[in-house]
Amino acid sequence: MTTASVTWVTGMQFVAESGSGHGVVVDASTENDGHNAGARPMELLLIGLLGCTAMDVISILKKKRQPVRDLKVFATAEQAADTPHYFTKIHLEYVAYGDVSEDALARSIQLSEERYCSAAATLRGKSEITSSYRIEKSE
Image (spheres, rainbow, N blue to C red):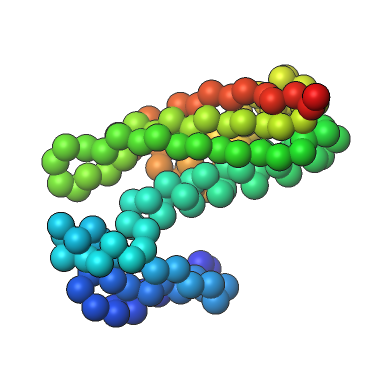
C-alpha cells in the first residue's frame, strides 16, 4: 500500500509527506490565496509522471547495456478549461545523452509508457499522452 499525507501550514500552503518519509511544500499562487512557496498539486502530478517514466527508461537502457550518460524528460500539458482542470493532453520529450541506439531508446520509451509506468497507466483514458525523443551523441 502507498501512503501520503498533507498538513496545512497557512493560506493554501501545505507540507506533504510521502509514506517513505520525504516532504515537499505544496502551495497555490498569490492570486489563489497562496504564498507561491511551493509546487502546485497538478505540477506534482506531472513531476510524478516524469519521474516514473524516466526511471523506467534508464532501467531498461541499462539492461540493454546502452552507454547512456544522462537522460532528461520534459513535459508540456494542457488542462481542461472547466472544473476539474484535469490534464487533457500531455507531451513528453525525452533527451538521451550518449551513444545510445535510437531503436533501444524508442523501445524503452514504448515499454515505459505502455507497460511499466504506473503514473501513465493512472492518467491513461483521461489524458492523451504523446511523446518524442532525441539523442545527443557524445563528441
